[in-house]
Image 1 (tube, rainbow, N blue to C red):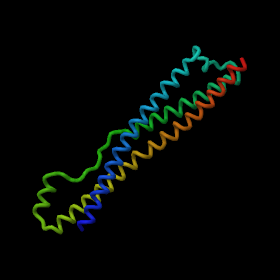
Image 2 (cartoon, helix red, strand yellow):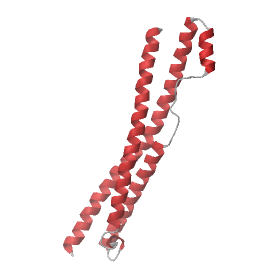
Image 3 (cartoon, rainbow, N blue to C red):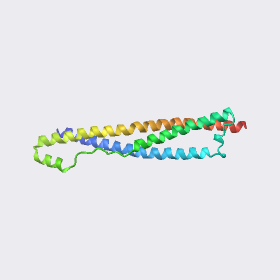
Image 4 (cartoon, rainbow, N blue to C red):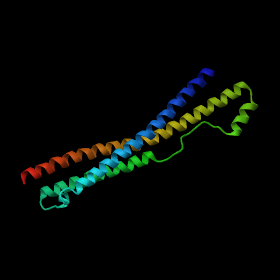
Length: 164
């Protein structure tokens, strides 16, 4: 039983590290998406808002591409915020009731209770990490799509500028 508890202790430390890793990744990703939003806003103001002048079918295509790009980036930002939302990091019971119980029982019951505490907390911690990873994955995919539309926007805008 001692080996099992040591194993669970190691797994708990690893899962806590993963939780912290996801928290940090969410914060960095949110910063990166915010920078992309600033750049996209600056692009929108380029040449007195030439992107918003739908005077020809080609200009309409550029405008539509910009709108889709902005939607992708905005959704990415929202999903990054969703992943970063503050939630409790599950932790092992550390209250007086648990300590008193451990003092009042024999060694085998102590080990069994500690085992159960680790197993229950690990399950909760894994669930919390998975809940953070889903919106972060969506945010990343949306940012990739937005980057593709930014590339297309650059190509279309350059084509328009060169043909004018």
